[in-house]
Image (cartoon, rainbow, N blue to C red; front, side):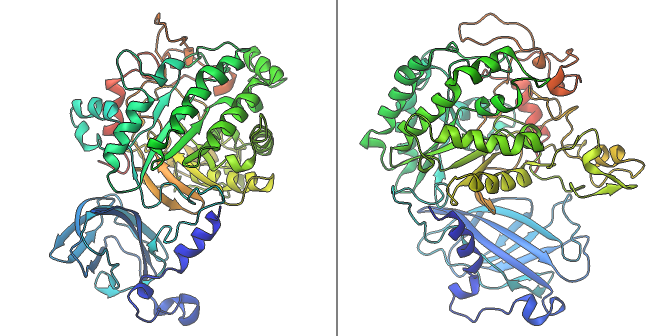
Length: 569
């Protein structure tokens, strides 16, 4: 793999170079005052008839309370929708103006927006940009991976680069049936294989082959990513009850022969060789062995059992081995989230445990393409109103009740740092990270517009944090949550994609006990009246009422997620 090379290429593939013109001087060469602004224009995904692009503008002149960026296309590109900016087009000329929530652009500050567009023929890159009428330097740009460099197995560097992502028609239909749901019903989401029966389809629903066949139909002549969640370990989810699985703690052989082997056989079918199949491997499993075992206050007998029998490690290793051997399958191991593994005593031990699993049951690190954080969780992508290095009246942000000595305050900083830690313990330097942004937008009227009061470190953090949960350990159907960043490829250094692996609108667990034949229990963390446990600091659960079983459609939650979306819909 050569994902580190991709970042270098993206930085060097200057738009001016694409047109054959001379490259602009850098701020270091001429002084920052000589360059009033810089623009990076990046094509993230491209197919036969369309593409998505991201634009980042950096203002090096006086601070602005509003802004307008303009450029023109040399071809027939036509923007069809955008986000984080009001985008209009007249002929080849495009204008992107600020939204009400991102008009402030400080000196040295940056703002990003994106869009989807159609084209035919050649998708030539624009060469000149202006910010409020002043010509900007073109810095970076091109495509996220202009030359996807395969690793020895034939896998591309970033499977999301220059590819569409599968839209699950079952989820899409449910979303579209909701009032206002058509605004997001065409977004790609993960397909959850959470029991043996899901392989062939449950209650007349689509099975794995059905989804892959549908993906081929969506693919056409373009590249297409299919996202699968592989989730049925023996003794699954040992620290919670809402998503307990069907297999007992010792049923590792059934996991191998009845779950992983049939999945591998289907994915290896040559019929599906043209698809890029991304697998999220066993969410919540390995992190539980680090945080919820032994003498820790958060330990559970079930997690102690799974640590002792080794079946989480064996199961993950077996899945990596069998699925990683398939040339078009890309394995991403679940890596919890910053509010779970971001503490010093969890961070490094987790990386070591993941390395152990990646070398179990015949697997090697070459079977691991990357890791995914925040799967089905709510941790904010980026907290802009405070950093881990801030102090208030001499007290570190780390000492606030919310941060509680964690090293990280959001998912982006955690994912990038954890990637470095994983490489340091022996994973390939080219691994990439995915971040699930399906429910971490935290928009709406409760979203802070600036830092909190500096009365104390707690008022500073609590007043400024986007994540409005009662406690960072709360995980079930959280009240006030919103859709996060829309799925996109290569949005930041070391990040392969932002994804919606958890389909918005699917419940985390029932708010009261519901009899079922799915092996799913009732977890009090899904009960809005529950006053908590050691894992959430004995706080209220923050869960929505009247929730159905995990994985079942929860209309009230879906409506809330749309209402509180950030960026807004």
